[in-house]
Image (cartoon, rainbow, N blue to C red; front, side):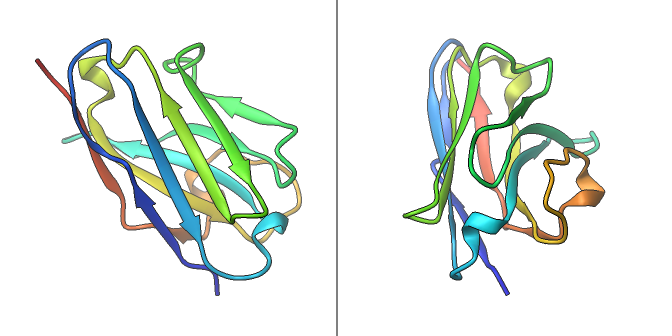
Length: 125
């Protein structure tokens, strides 16, 4: 069973940048689509970005398009989320997740079956 561990969260000022990383265990990382999700206090978890198994297809929520970039390195079993031009409304716990059950790229929370514990991102001056 794959396990996911996020890192890279922290406190950053508005307009700043952070890079989140998710390390996956197991030998079959390249067969999973991967996604980043976030949950702000008092709000439901939402999809932020997703990337196909080979990395050719990517999805971004409208709220982060042009500011966030998802990437993966199948040789290192990692998926990253580069976050630029951060806003206070980006404050949330960010989760990495894997879809181990299908071959395509899906973006809904229910499509992902393996989750990391999350990392806190706080954007504040």
